[in-house]
Length: 295
Ligand SMILES: [Zn+2]
Ligand SMILES: [Zn+2]
Image (spheres, rainbow, N blue to C red):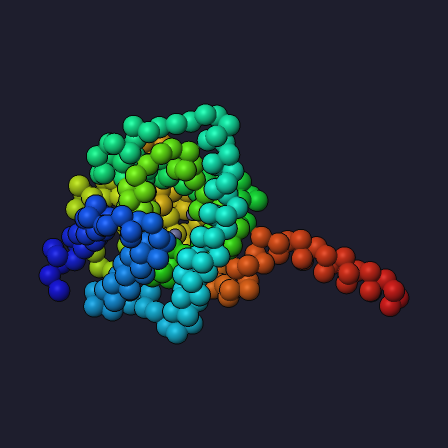
């Protein structure tokens, strides 16, 4: 496949997603199913591209990786999506009411402007949440399982500890009165960029794209196995622009990703990871108590 075409794949996919929501009939915007279908469609497409235009042989999917990824995509699109909408959104809506925020003019702005604003607002929160996760030990414990990934693939953006996945899904977009299609466009574009930023695809988009949007080059460096310190850059999940603005941008790329000894974590290990020190302490105390009794 022509390299030039491959390099244009991320911007082309983003353009198709935007065109889709720009032209979507109202009925499609009133249901979550179409949004889910768009995300799954992009995921399937990029996953397929990993097969046709592989970036690193060492990141090739095996069965364990594939089924782990599938599990997390299903978990993200059901449980996490539900938790975010049912548990967090009512608080945002209550705050909107209490603060008397009304922005009826917003829905009259052009579709693209709204989609861009919604994405900027959401990404601003994501950037600081992600940065916090790399600056606070408790938050890091929830995010570390995502960094223990030893290879990157299209679905890997969905892989992580459930607490982290919930935290990173939070946003204040619901404070304002958008055209729903623009919000769906912003969500779909963000996810599309995140999918490409984790994908084992030989695409290096041109600077007019990679100046604003996160690419696999930026994000593989964020996942680098060099050291924990070296991961503290390129926090923008889909807008690398945030790093350029807030001074955390670093150029480069990493083929070897992971943490510490580069041990791959299983799903149960990813889930108990933040509680592991507590479990270890309790075990040590129990062992100490039983050895005292045995004496
Ligand atoms: Zn990170
Ligand atoms: Zn990642």
